[in-house]
Image (cartoon, rainbow, N blue to C red; front, side):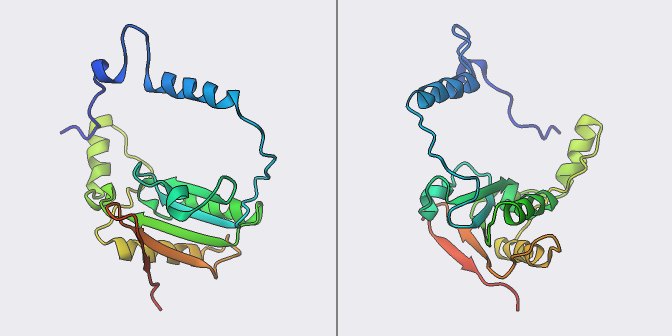
Length: 184
């Protein structure tokens, strides 16, 4: 059984006549963007001193959903919005080198990790002949995983600001955040 994503369809993903790929279109969009770009003179330190950790799901427009502007926050995304060692690495740099004080964690309804298990790693190993060094970090319960992520942030010895850590579930059908209360 192949666990790979569907293969690209040349007729929809690339215009064979022009060599137009998604990446080509992105680069062209950047050229147009740069024509009117002015350096906003911002610092890398987020104005609101907050780091947002969220899922990479394309349906989440975090800046719009949270009323944020360019420069307001650090946005750290991965599959599931799960707090992993690499998220702790990014949060540590965000706090210690760039001044953030608050952490907002956002999972969402309809997440792809709700349907995966660690069997994904085994299937991947069978397909490619090498076992991934990373865990899938799949989950069955959104709230429980948000709580686990909050706990990982709060107990990390590398993070100096762990008093303002809050977790939420974003509903992809309503756009609303629902706060998840931590275990006491």
